Image (cartoon, rainbow, N blue to C red; front, side, top):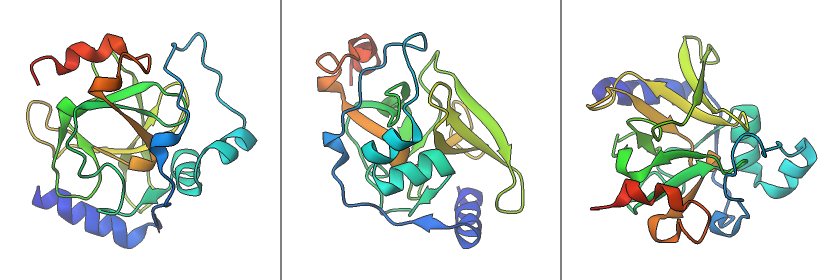
Length: 184
């Protein structure tokens, strides 16, 4: 974890970190994910209209939000984290943990979800960027300093996510993921 904190501080010194927008994203119209066959990424103009400035910069221009000043870093509710652009399911709260970095951190994506990994050198050394497969949204990065069972830390920007509480999954079109929260 100390290595993770050092990486965060080093990265923070070298990259532009964005301030959080004050928009309440719980009101944003994220459509239920219908699958890759039906998803068509909105135009740049549509994305600028629908997303906050921070969400747009993070997802479309690889921005980073401030640590400890973002919507989900300390969220402890059961639920599903989906791509803010497409609604595609990405992470479950059951795999979220407190990394101490100030960003939502997960040990793994939801089983069966394909996250795209790319190497980026934007801060002077190689890091593994993670993007949503279908919307190609920049989500954050994955580091090899997480807890078991994976040893990975998916360090994700809240601005790239929309949270759907477990008790709303059925009503919001994500009922097939209810099994992730049985017994919680």
